[in-house]
Image 1 (tube, helix red, strand yellow):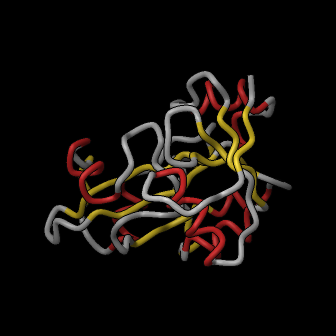
Image 2: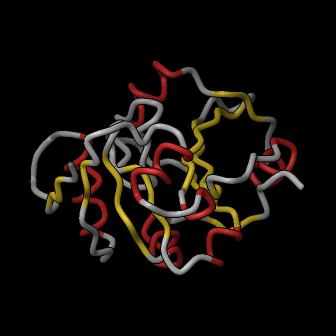
Image 3: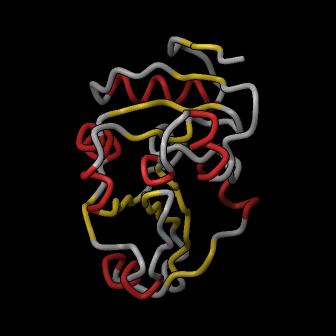
Length: 166
């Protein structure tokens, strides 16, 4: 069962995504799929699209700065950590799940490109721009939204880069 939700005011993570999208001029409809969309494969199945149209939101931590950074890549790709480190300007390490939740307000598997509690440097793989629309997490394990990729990248304040492994 799919439930469509219009973004509303409120303190929850899904509401934060809707509010951030609205503030950035991005019109979205958050859909609760009723089943997990934590992985790119699960999300693609639930959304009825190919995996390359799913946006994976990967959070890494700068090894020297300690700051969290967000990397948006197509669901069918793996991120090249060396490429990501170059665009980030420092070595990266996988961020602790508790830190991700505490600082961004999202649990792993529901991290959205939008609506973080903190200002977070964001990078997006250029391959996302090749799709007519993409689906991204909306703040919960079963919540997603569809967007035009250029508009999503702009709303997320993301820097376009080559991030995917060859």
